[in-house]
Length: 425
Image (cartoon, rainbow, N blue to C red; front, side, top):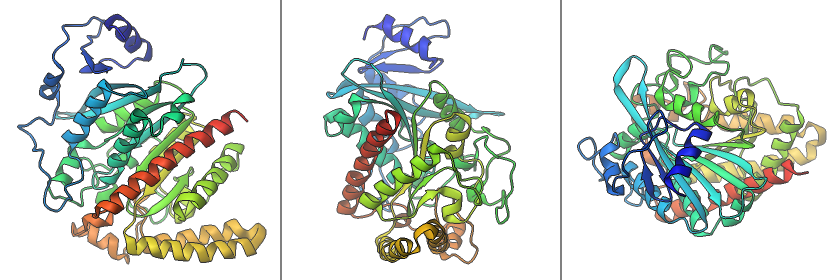
């Protein structure tokens, strides 16, 4: 793609002003009037990035296994893929946001567009958001692995009918703190939970929910944070068929509604999402699935999941929790197998049995997408005191890490195929 076409594309999709637009590895700076300046050497990108060598280090803390990527590693790997995405094309832009009322706080977010080599045609559009919660390092790792799979051909089949927009590392400033050993950090550096800062039932304070809990502080008002403004603005640039947000700390596969634990989406889309999750869960997860609020028994306003579905009218919106420690995972799977038998025997009352089971499970093993408050929960108390373990949210053995990468890349591929089938039924 030449420079003029890149500028035209940028103007068409409304992606500027941004520091730089990457098209097949060539860097184009775009001014507000659409003009371009000289194209610098691609190695110069580091000097424009907020986390340069003076602000952070590429080294991981001893508390983080060496096979994890640093924030800089992720960025540089994606930069390399933008130059060599053999199974398709990867366009990468880096958007800078500044905190309202605090010009000293800035954040740079990488945004990817991945397409196949076939003519555009009638393709669905799917949005992936990874890394909202800093301590869940496995979420951006999973996104990075998925992008690599799209580019190296392992997942290229999905590019025949899907175009992806991917934010691989949504909370990079706080992720760097985790990389340096602060393994309990969930919020952004301003102390805001990015998955409570969306403008969907933001003011609702449901029974049992405290807006003042440090790890779930929603911020002073919706979209008070530069990170969530970038997420929102990217989501609003085009109509998406699918939305997925990736988390960890337990295992679960959710759909809207999260903001109210008494509601189920009875629409056709709601039923389609439930059956889609049921199929994926049986194949890959053996974990709680369904409406987020009802499944965990806890209302959670202000999430990206509900915003994508309610405000942006994404037909199929999901939140996945992709990792639990082995001792928790085995407990989940054993109890899940027992409960599925009860659900089968319950017939029409099966969903009631299923919802009660999920709620009971999450009282013992907190969901970190909705972060169920339970003052009697050992994990909750540990997180509050800053004494949590890296392994609570992320695998520490290489084989377990690789298994997580492989399993959930396959989930993302299968999910896109199932959304495509629903869209064309």
